Length: 384
Image 1 (cartoon, one colour):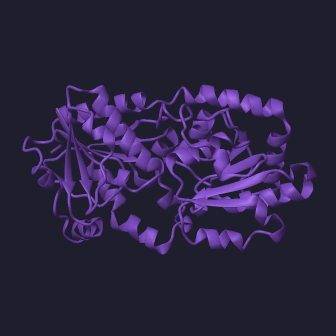
Image 2: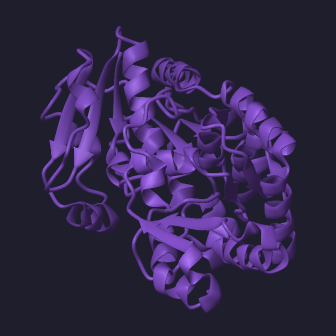
Image 3: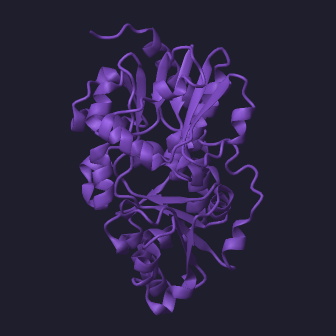
């Protein structure tokens, strides 16, 4: 069979969806050499991952047009269809498409598609999104895409339930395919996290640019920790996110007395973030809502104790391997920091539980389920 995968989400830099798109495409192709996988990239300056050249059953199509222009055409005219473009690379009909995330998409009516949903935060919590982001989610027409796809993948049981509640999708149309962990994560890291921090214990908080990740409570909790626990004077706070207005906004929240102990990093490489997390005393991820929570597992793979929120899909993903605290209460956050930092037995237990937890999540398992769904969709007669 021949499957096509929309690789545009993998071109958006670091992040869970980019990681998912790349790892699922790579692992599916590696596990199913009997199938051909056609990867659709778009943009005026596409950089292909090295692994696409290593797999004989992978073909690549690059649509050499700026993504903004392509999106405008798809939004206004539903043209060009992705299948008409990909015919330039492979003339044989595609058996099924994998759409790894919401996006501007147009496919001919004869094309079968499987689409992945990572969360429905845009529908449940629009207040976390800018007006531009809200417009984008409206413009891609999520409900239309969900109805258009022959089958849907959800990254967690929680996301599956949200899809059913928010969009009225029947349970029979959704298969849960949890995310995996890159097997290289935590095994071999050429860069040392100590290069990004000075001597002392450290707390790392990731995705600081996103209001949904609740970094404000982390900062407030850290300041309260330093204020009420004198023995934590050596503890540093590292905030990681994409470059943007968030740096200026968060700096304005910081008391001058603690500014030298708070370090803001933007646009770190994959290895730099992994090493910084590995060398941290605590990884904190107090998100208000998650469809899965991949950073939690990545920290656990490093053996780093995790503090997080008891909500959404986080409980499903982290299980009993994390220390939970109220994400709305900075005092509770400070108490959680103090408890984990001061208790070696607790840190050791969280680290050990985390590593066992991570073993349950592999990209092989994710890809195997994905291939099964693609095959089933490919052979199922179209509904009239």
